[in-house]
Length: 626
Image 1 (spheres, helix red, strand yellow):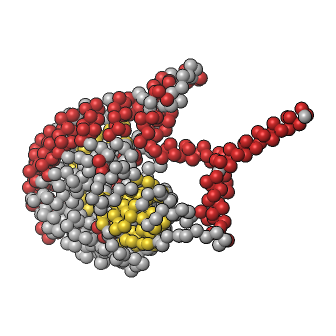
Image 2 (image 1 turned 180 degrees about the vertical axis):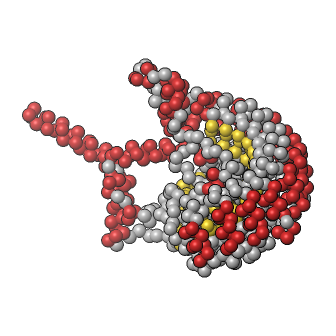
Image 3 (image 1 turned 135 degrees about the vertical axis):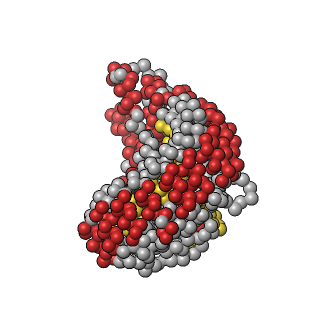
C-alpha cells in the first residue's frame, strides 16, 4: 500500500492542477465549443436580427474646415445618409477637419508638444455622433470619400443623449484603435474595422482622427452603426479565436493591459501608499543618485509612473515628486478623468507649469469646484493652460483662471463654444499672455477689445470662426496699434474684414510671420491690399488666401519679390493666377514647402507635374472631384 502512495499523491496533484486550469479556461473553452457548433451547424444558437442606422445628429467636435453658419465642409454633414459615397474627390457635402499633415506642427504658431504624453495616444481631432436607437454594436462603417486613413480610434458611450433621465454612470469604451496610416490612394473607401464586443447598448459613438500622415484634407461622408437590440450571447467574431490564447502567459498580459486601460481612473489605488509592501531593501536603486533616478523615470508615461509607484517606497517617493509633473498632459485620459482623479493628483501639482486638460471634464466628469481646487494648487506656477473643447468651463472657471494664474502666458480655449460671451472679459486680467486661441468661441467684440488693450505681450492670436465679432476692421486696427509683438494671426472665416483693417494691421505689426485670411470674402485684390501686405510684411512665412478668387499675378509677383522666407502659401480657388507667376514664386522663394493651388482654373495637372519635377522640395496640392 505504501509503495503506491507517492504515485497517488502525484496523480492527485495533477488532477487538482487540471481542475484549476479547466476552471480558469472554462469561458474560453465555451467560446471555442460554441464556435465549433456554429461552424458545423450542429448546435446553432438563436441570433437577434441586426439593424443598421446612420448618425442622427452630430453632438460635438474639435474642429472643422467649414463655417459655423453653413453646411459646406462641416462636421454636421456626418448626420444622415451618405451624400457623396461611392464617389471620390473634394466635395462640399462632406465633413472635413481643420488640419492635415505634419507641417502644421512646424509653424511658428504651433506650440511645442507636452513631454510624457502617452505613446499610444495619437488622436488630434474628434467628432461625437448620436444615433436613434441603442444597440449592441456588431459593426461600424465609416465612409471616407477623400484621402482616407485618418481614423485612429472608435469609442462607444453608455449614456443615451436622448434619455430624459440623467445616467448614474457614464462609461466610454474603446471598441477599436489603431495607429495613423498613410493610404497611398486618395480614392473613396468604406472603412469597417473589426470592433470589440461591449456589455452595454449604445447610440453614441466617438471617432478620433489623426491626419498627420495624410497628403491632404481627409473627407468623411457618413457613419453607419450596425447592431442588435438584445445582448448577444455569442460574439460574432469567435471565428477568429487564436488557439495561442490558451497560453497561461496571456492571462498576465490581459491583466497588464487592463491596468493600462483604466488609465487615470485608478490613480487613487495606484498612488496609495497603503498598497505598498514593506520593502527594507531597494537593491541597486539605493546606490543611485536621486537626480539620476528622477531622470530615468522622467521618460515614463503617466500610467507607467503610477504603476512604478507601487513597487517600493523609494520609487513611490520619486514618482510622487512634484518635479515629475512640471508638464502634465491629462488629455489622453479624458474618458475617465474626474474630480476624484484631480483630487489625488493635487499633492503632486505644486510645480506644474504646463497643464493640458483639453477634451476633459465633459458630461459632469469635472466640476467647477474640482477645477478651482486644482488651480489653487498649481495656478501660481502655471504658464501654459490647454482647455480645448472643455465644455465643463463656465464664467466662474475663467474668473478662477484670471485670479489664480497671474503668470499665465498661453491659454487655449479652442472650440469651447458653450462658454457664454460675458465670460471672456476675465481674460483681460492676464496681462502676460503671449498665446491666445479663441477658435470657434462665442467671444464678442467688447470682450476682445478689452483683451487687446490690456494684453500687450500677445505674440500668437487665433480668432478663426469667431462669428460674433461685428467689426473686424476695428479689431484689426486695435491689434495694429496695441500688439506690436504679434507674430501670428488667424482670421480664418472672418467675414467682414476689409482692405482698411488689413492695411492698419500690416502697418502696425511688422513682426508678423503668419497670417490666415482664408475665406475672408470682403478682401479684394483690386484694392491693393495683398500687394501692400507683401511689401510691409517681408518676414512672412505662412499666408493663407484660401477661396479668394480675386488673387492675381501681381499679388504673387509681389510675394516673390518681397517675401523670400515664405514657406506656406494657400491660394485655393483663384482663377486669375497663371503658371508663369507661380513659376517666378517658386524660383524666388527658396524656402517654400507647401503650395495649395486646388481649384485654380489656370493650373492644370500638367503644370503641377512640371512644378513637382522642377521643385521637388515643394509639396504642391491640387485636389480633384470625380
